Image (cartoon, rainbow, N blue to C red; front, side, top):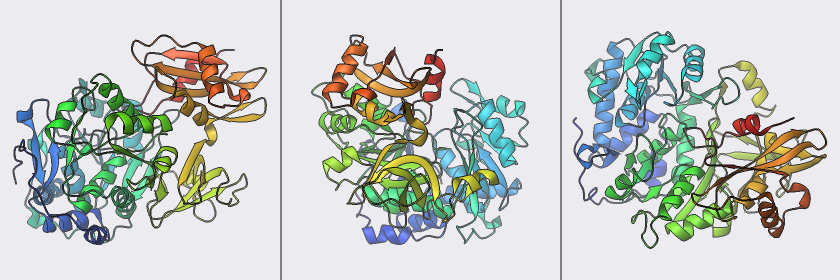
Length: 536
């Protein structure tokens, strides 16, 4: 079924999807079963909108067309020898074609290995070798980089360039075997960031991805009148999270190949996006753009920002609500567990600002002490997880054995505590605790306070080797354009006024035009800061 031009007036009104209907759809055993059920329920409702720089190039796909076209792509892949269990890697931008290819592989029961399109030889080559991919889908030349040539250099076993809709395989669905009926087999290999070592292949099932997406969907409770947005790489674990939410509640999302403001703003405005977000760095970029337009609402239709993937300082939350004029619901997830907790629009402002929300039904959170012993509510310790959304482990069996405790809880390495209401407060990473003269200092605590200092666009606090203290506290600050350079004395005075204990005050301040971040969710790469600013 052909794609159709996007109406400038938005989708036609539709009857809301009742919460019980969404929960019933969530009982689908596989991702493909959920696609088929949504298509049968609302075949003519818009599912995906591809935003183009020129509005005339916008494209849309309905839920019915999503199912039908994905089946034809599956048949084409089947004709090329892809079968249940065949490992197919794909490194594609956030496009309708990417979603179609992924769903076609889900229809076949293949094992798919999404690779972030910004990755290059080291990470991509490792993913291809470790997964033993038999086919590798690439976008050709994208953003000035030749992915097809890289695939050849890496010795990929089979290369499928997907440069346009016409490049997708096509065939008659009549040749297809029945779709997989069981969603508990490993059919997804996602990759951790691998910023300091080789990435780890994380093993997921349809059921674990459905559980993660259901947590996001039921927390945010969208309606068919909403329009969402996917401005992050669809190859990220957040891709299926968001797709499951669209399928459960029957509303569309605008796809952006790359997120850059102000260029993308026209797409948000043109399609009336009501739910936007991605991560904390996305929030701050929206805020920076809003501040260039005082008195004008940046996205007039926006009612909710939602995201995760990085800590959210309370001051950023308050600034979003105050300046963008919308609610902000933040969550907690990771490649191993696509959604752990999520704030909801009904949470109090205090909970939304200071916690990561509550876990969904079926997600067990245990806070543990140094020996792995469970701690009571309010005590700080390592966050451990057990539930259907948790991955099945890693490609490397040794990594799997190390990651799970004897009771099957995943060791996250994150530190946190549970409030009496069941909300999770993250207090840092076990590896992100600075030990200065034997005293533990949470980098996250200092970072949150730094965000309240005028002129600070971003902040990272790191521990650096120090012969006298063991580690010294270094604050690395990204300032807003035009702001007067901060001094260490100004930073210390602000932190003292905020009540920070003296032993936690930074002893070193570094100012940068921009903090180093990854390309997926714009996470700060602290290892690069440690390498740059460590000194004997």
